[in-house]
Image 1 (cartoon, rainbow, N blue to C red):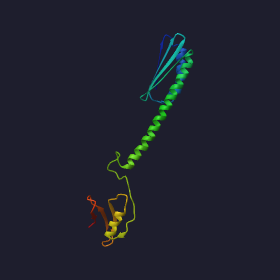
Image 2 (spheres, rainbow, N blue to C red):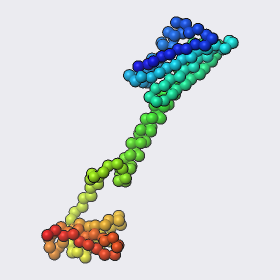
Image 3 (cartoon, rainbow, N blue to C red):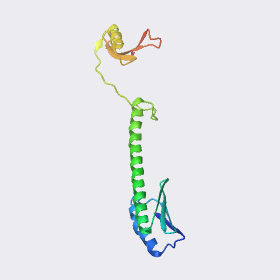
Image 4 (cartoon, rainbow, N blue to C red):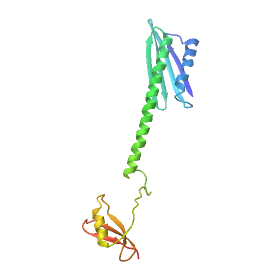
Length: 178
């Protein structure tokens, strides 16, 4: 909802001027929909120059346009054009920031340093083949991805085992179910 205030200085804000400003405001209102926003219009005259100043506060953003000339109505039109341009630019900037922000958030989530906690965020699937413990150790060493474990079926026991590198980086451990 628009809250419109028109003030004047050394120039009387006639009903015709007020009606003209109100007639032009739908061009601005369409950008804010049902949201509240304030519009302050100040008209003034100094010698033969008339000026119109528009100040709009909406969605936490301030917009301002000031024009002057010999025709007050032309100044009002020019201000509407300026404000409309500012609003479109701000809207584009916000949309771009939101789009970039969501892409950055996805990238952060992909790296695992996000606010998601206590959730399974990655699955790795591979075929488990029956092999000897020594072969499993070689497979773990072959992996260049920095894997610290390798799952396999122990050919001697027929059970699923996990071989892993110990923190010392030199030795290995095996997890074997009973």
